[in-house]
Structure formats: structure tokens, C-alpha cells
Amino acid sequence: MAFLTRDLLIKKYGDLSKRVNLSLYILFYLLIIGHSACEAPPVPQGYFQTQSVDEIEAGTQLAESAGDTPNMSRYLESLDGYWLHYSQVSTCVDIGSSLEQINRSLYLVKVIQSDHGGLEETWEACQIDLTPVISVQARVPDALRQSVYPLTTQQGILVGTPPKPSYSSGPMAEIWGIRFEQNLLDPMPTEPDDERIFDMDNDGEIGVTLYIGDTCLAYMTQRRVSHYQGEMVAPDEIQGQALSVTEQYIIDASAPICKTAYQTRSNPQRSHFNRIRVDGLGGALDFDQNQDGNIDCEEVLSQRQRLFPSRLQVMEVDHEACSL
Ligand SMILES: [Ca+2]
Ligand SMILES: [Ca+2]
Image 1 (cartoon, protein in one colour):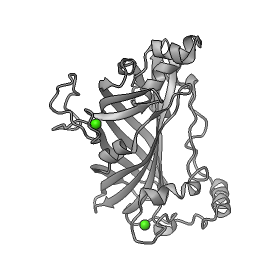
Image 2 (tube, protein in one colour):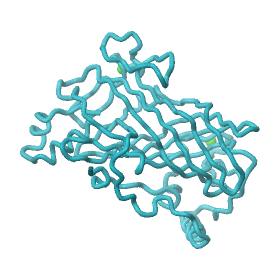
Image 3 (cartoon, protein in one colour):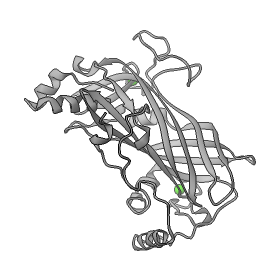
Image 4 (cartoon, helix red, strand yellow):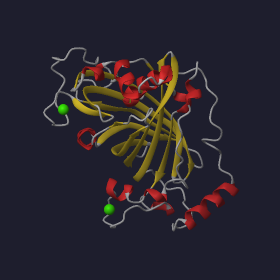
């Protein structure tokens, strides 16, 4: 997604040179989380390492030092319950050079599994972070986030038997500011007067509002379609790849400089997810602080230290991974 023009960039950063221009473009692109392939970059070493006994013991020690009970989780009959799903999706922005932007989203997912392995999943986005470019930070306002979620998907499936069943989420469509008849297939709007566009976040502005740094508000629509595919690596953990593509249509902006669109490419080689059970079942982490049988984002966010870095690792930006 691209909201800032080169003029703005130069104005904001003086004569910071060509790299600054490139970075600016990236900045705008923050929202987009696509999935087309970049030329195979060197894969970061060990992002999804196979766990060994030693590592499990080390992880147990970390958990103990963080005040949690040792990880002695056991396989259950189903995935039913609450999971935290941490998605890190890389996008390459091409502007002469290629720069990487990462969307880090922490979802709370309530899962209901049917006898044949079909999954109904209700997704709440507790946090959506877009890595800054230069010093500009794009932000998803709470009003926007709350207008989109929770979302329910029914196409997920778990296949196979322990110790390594395979998981697929099926398609997850996160749609901002548009009423589609067919969420996955209908074309995106191309004109401001498209009747399908609506004020989804209820701020009186068309479409949804995205913050771009401290400079601009972009009024836009977006469709992000993601498939998560992986396998269980422990009774309380699923790891795998994120295939995600994003389309955007910027309807208007608080300043003309924020309306520009830029070319981006999805980067599936560096797009991953980890999912960890957090309802205490089978010996897993238990985030239900008030023990009311439900888990909400407030409970999750107040206990982040139990996840990072002992259970979830943040993937840092690496522009080299986007070089062609
Ligand atoms: Ca709006
Ligand atoms: Ca609770």
C-alpha cells in the first residue's frame, strides 16, 4: 500500500537520497500483506527448527523461569479450545530496489473441531503491527480492527494422527470497507462511487481509515486472503507457512500525497505462523486469568511475556531477503 509520494518523502526527510525514497514507498505498503514470490532469498536459519529433547528441556527451563508450569502438554482428541495464532507475513516493495515490510498479527482463535477434522475457527485480532519504514509508522486504529473482527472461518481441517497431524486453515478473508457477495472472488472496487463500499469503521469517512505516520489518513478498502498451512509440532503448538495476498483500493486521503499506490510482491518464503494453545487443556498455557471459561484479548495482551520470546520469536526485517 502506498500512501506517500516522493515529494512528501523529500520534504520529510530532506535529501536523504534514493534509499529514502525507496523506503518511503515501502512504508506505504505496510498494509499490504501479499504473497507472490520474491526470488528465493536465503531463508533465515532455523525459524522452524525441529525440536529436540534438549530444546524442549531448554524451553521448559525458560517457562519455569518465567513463572509458568513446565510444558508437559499431551495430545487431546481435538483442537477444541483457545489458541494464539502469531502470523508474520513478509511483503517486498519494489521501487528500483526491494525492501521488506512485515505484518505481525496476533490472533486469538477459538476452535471447534468436528469428528472428521473439519474446523470452525473464530478469529479475533488482538494486535496488528506493521514494521516501520524509516521513521514512519502505519497503524491500524482500534476502531478499524474492531469493525473487522471477530471473523469466523469454516474451511479449516486437521488431517492425520499424532505426533504430527497436518493443519490447513482454508481461506481467511479479512475485508475492510466492502460488502462482497462472494468474499473470495468478487472484484475489488475501482471507483469511489462503488455501491459496495461502506463506512465500516463508523468514523463518517468512506471506507475504513488507516493512519500513515503522523502525516496522513488514508480512506480505503482492502481484501486480504490468507491460507495457513502447517503441522502440529507439539500437542499445544502448530507451525507452518502463511500464504497471503492483499489487494487495496485507496478511495481518498487527508492529503493528496497519501493516495499513491506502489508495486508490491508477497514473500511466502518468509511468511510464517505459530499457533499455541492457551486454555490450559492438556497441560498447555492457561491465559484465562479470571477463570470464567473464556479468553479475551485483554487477558492475552496482559500476559505477552509468557509468549515472547520463550514460545514465539519475532522475525526481524531483512531487506536482503527481498533483493532480486
Ligand atoms: Ca470510515
Ligand atoms: Ca477469562
